[in-house]
Image (cartoon, rainbow, N blue to C red; front, side, top):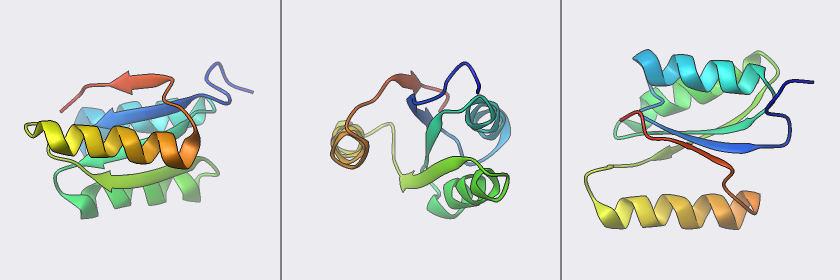
Length: 91
C-alpha cells in the first residue's frame, strides 16, 4: 500500500513530460489518477500505461486556459469519483 492509497488525484498536463512522470509516481503510490491534457490522445496514453502497470487512471481533455474547461473537469471527477483529494497544476 502506497502513501496515496484511496486518494483521487488530477494531474493537469499529464499527457507527457513532467506531468506524465508525476501521474505515474502518484499511481504507483496508490492514487487513482485523472490525467488531463489539451491533447486527449497524450492523456489517454499516460492513463493506459498506468492501467497496464496495475494502477487506476482515466484521461480527460482539458484546456487549463479556459475556466469552463476547468469547471467541467472538476464536476466530472466529482461525479465519477466522489471527490478530488489532490490537484497537481502542472500544465
